[in-house]
Amino acid sequence: MEITRSWREQKIMLKRRFPVLSDEDFEFKEGEKESMLNNLSRKLKKTREQLELLFAELQTY
Image (cartoon, rainbow, N blue to C red; front, side, top):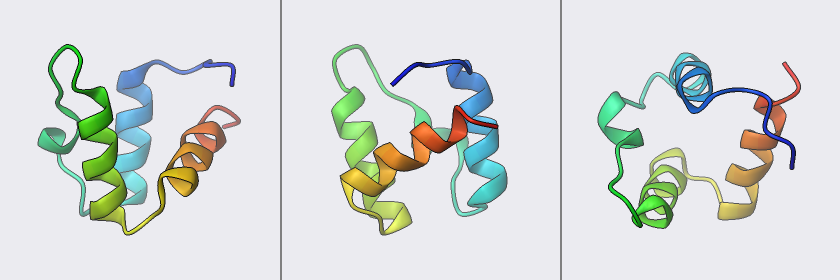
């Protein structure tokens, strides 16, 4: 997947699309990105595959 948007832009877009998300949901420390993604997946009730498709979709806007 080619990333064309910054992480900041992606966070803003996701928060607008899913108001249940907060800044804290996107915070992670070095090496804990997987944990953050798993938490997002759980909070949005999406599989990890669906979450990856969602991030890929953000790149097309």
